[in-house]
Amino acid sequence: MTNTFTAPVKPRIEDSFAITFAPLSLEEIYAKADASANGAVVVMSGMVRNNTDGQPVVALEYQAYEPMAMQVFYQIAAEIRTFWTEINRVVIHHRIGRLQVGEISVLIAIGCPHRGEAFEACRYAIDTLKHNAPIWKKEHWQNGSSTWVSIGACEQSGENC
Figure 1 (cartoon, rainbow, N blue to C red):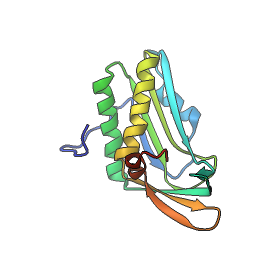
Figure 2: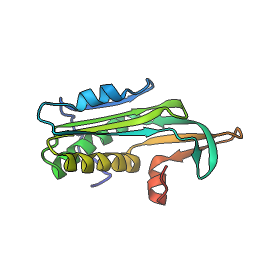
Figure 3: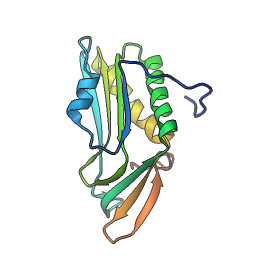
Figure 4: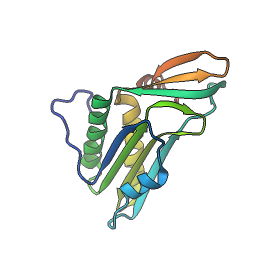
C-alpha cells in the first residue's frame, strides 16, 4: 500500500462512496453492500463517543479535502479487491460537519460470499481510511475548548481515535 497515487482510480459501479453533511443510514449502507452472491455483509459504524482519554467530549466537527478523500476511498476498494478477490461490494460513506455524541461519522460495508474475508476487508478499509484519507476532526470539549486532530495522526500515535 502506498500514499502516492500515480493515476486516478475509477470506482466500480456496484460500489458506493460518499462524503456528506447528511446523517448516515445503516439500512441504506447495508442495502448498497447487499447482493445475491453474498454470504456475508459486514458493517462497521464509527460513532462520536462522549470522551477522549477521559476528557468529556460534547461534539466532533469533521472536515475533508473531498476530491482527494474520494480518491483514497476508490483506492481502498481497489486494494481490497487485490487482497480479497471474492469481495463484490465496497461501501464507504463519511460525514462532515458538526456531529453530536452518538451520531454516526463513518459507515463501511463489505459484501462478500464469505464472512472471514468480509471482516478482514472491513477492518482494512477503516484502518486505511483513518491513516490515508485527508479528513480531520475537531474535538469540542465540555469545558468549551476544542482541538483539531488529524485522523491519520491518531493512527500514527497508536491511539484509538
